[in-house]
Length: 312
Image (spheres, rainbow, N blue to C red):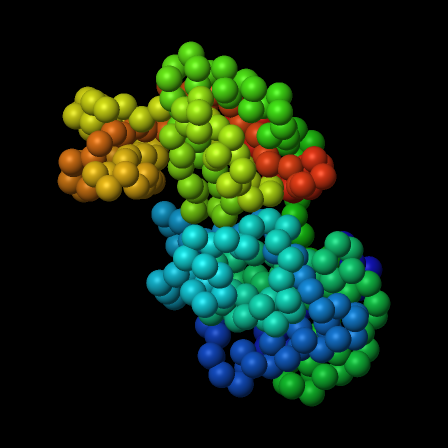
């Protein structure tokens, strides 16, 4: 955490002490926020940022505005979101556009940081938190001149919280040897690869495909290995569980899709999956994950802060 952290908001904290769920104005106030981030960046002397813990809107959206198509990332990243992963380095200008996306609640969210030198976190209701390794009096004055309120605070409330029991097993040679042995035993497996929370990619793993899939994975991707899809789609759809679960299916074009669902939407799900080549259910009672790990950085070190819960 940088030594100096500031809460930046368009509302006077001395008189506005409650949350009333405001939106971005998409105009002068929003521009003031972005100018303030740029000013803090200049005074800190940084030109780049790292994306941390990226995510897009999932099954439930708590924002005031519905997410836009592409979650606000269209034009910033390719359609497959390559480059939008934990640890990815971006120019400050791209970081400012991500701040805009988060202020507008377009759908994407992440922490923007640079080691312990700098951070930008965007919370709900137009609250923004900026941290720097130096006290930034010029940036504070510029933000206030722009009409924003700036107050020093001990730390960002959006700082990542570690749990002692978190599991961060590296997806190293030993992991892939284990997965390869299971693929040999079962013929094929299903790999869930999550580089962006709520946007997993799925791969059907055969013994001959492991190396190719492994080479495609972005650093810090969370991996979960499941039993493979079943070709008996009728049996899968005929025994849908209660509660919350995830359906994964391969359509006639070979694409693998997923949908989080609960028992209120069984009929809609059956219509959606009807005609699929293969399907399965994950994240439901009685469905066992076979293995899990996190892709290390190129030097072999796991620097991802997110992890699998010991009981999850």
